[in-house]
Image (cartoon, rainbow, N blue to C red; front, side, top):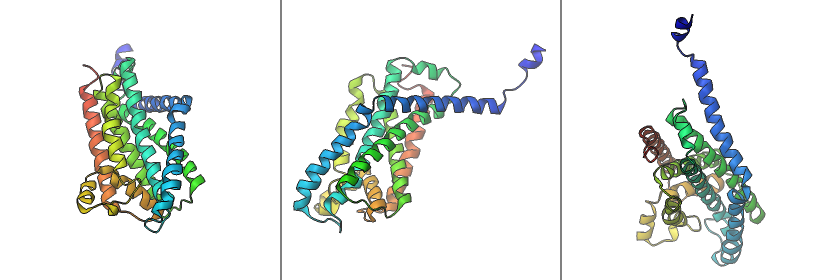
Length: 270
């Protein structure tokens, strides 16, 4: 009887259910972590956005005047929302996954029956959840200062999802190779912040001299911000089709890299 039982192949339904439970557990843990420390995960971005609107929108906006046919505060609102989504999607995954490495409970996932792509997906979904919550919080702040029309709802949603997915995956890769807490802040400080501020959040690249205009076109965040702005206002400094192509390629490349490196145990089993 026992020999017969040993020869019975595992049921696909049981494997699928096990994977679903594992994925759901990672996502729920990430969600509870975000909500539990909301004063550190959600509130700071809302406060920062308020300061941006007060200082840049109210003070400088009066001097700058309309931009692209819209009030300056309305023009910068989509960029500020996207800035918050980028920073929080990246930060959530890099801090959570590195915390799992530092606390040694990543080993529980490594010995579990969960495939690498599912582990990556679980952490990335947590980053996207935080990006979405913070994005909604900053949108609510923006509506206190300006009217925000939605010209193309599907483009708004698509750009937000792909951008959040891109930087969640980037945060996962950063966490894999980070060996201490200092190394998880290098990329946000020296790469993400400059690229975001130079990505057309507060201005149109059409304002720039020709050399700076061409230089700005190599900044991937420029395309994400402008695609998101196009969804709201219907205006963009770059091709929206090209922007989505860049985001899709980034997601595919980063996800593949994350899964391959997880399979090899890069930065984890060392």
